[in-house]
Length: 348
Ligand SMILES: C[S@@+](CC[C@H](N)C(=O)[O-])C[C@H]1O[C@@H](n2cnc3c(N)ncnc32)[C@H](O)[C@@H]1O
Image 1 (tube, helix red, strand yellow):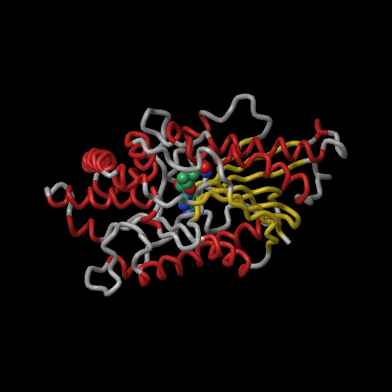
Image 2 (cartoon, rainbow, N blue to C red; image 1 turned 120 degrees about the vertical axis):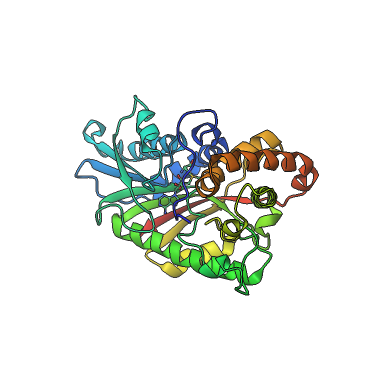
């Protein structure tokens, strides 16, 4: 399976662009706290009059434009007293996997922007920018991925073969192997950013994790991924996808528990944790609407399903997912809440 896990591109009705309001709501709800962190914690030399900002895992819009503009506004506000703002220029680096729909991203970049826009394709688990070149980095809903699936999960004869298509949290052995890989990957991400950021620069992380004690499949996203898995199995029984191929199909998604996430960052060092905050807001939970839920998990996970099993099998899978979502609404209504976070790290 390819390690890239890109969203469905384009501007059409089935694109991530049209169905990423859930992710965008966290950016909106965090704006004030991001402004505050930039005002009080960013500590950079601006004598060069060039400020570099990067979004890691930008996808194809529109949330990336909102978060980037939030950062620019906050930086301008901070430095307006001590500098001639006319002279400051902003350069924004949009990063994502090479398979991301960069064409749509650059076609829709706001015409009123006051920054130079650059694409930097490549895995954010490695370096994508020069050393000491970055003032503020951001990553929104992009750090719940692992770079590879532990090979034991794909081997039907292995004692830790994972019959599910993700880490439900219910098998300790499977969860441990996912976590081991997640730690390696998060450290790689932090290591790359630590080299790219200037001392005193900030890294703003937004996304979802699991409240301590809650397992993935007890939350709405976990249940939705379980429905995708069971739908794929039904399709396999009908002979529409190859069962053996399905046995090895695992999503590179892993949500860490809050304390574990914090510990991994602390253990890495190099950064001071300035903000580690649960952001509660009205749009922080998925609405219990089968159409909305099915679309949300189609634009995010559907691309991987289609790339493995073909477009037809993917469409059929999601017809079943929608049906299951309708039938299982009472179960979804009992789901445990997830957690949305804002983390701000300062490069030491
Ligand atoms: C759910 S989307 C989030 C998009 C956007 N930041 C937002 O908040 O709406 C996650 C993005 O992370 C990207 N991504 C996942 N793994 C990546 C990697 N190793 N390197 C770069 N981008 C990656 C995916 O391609 C996808 O565009």
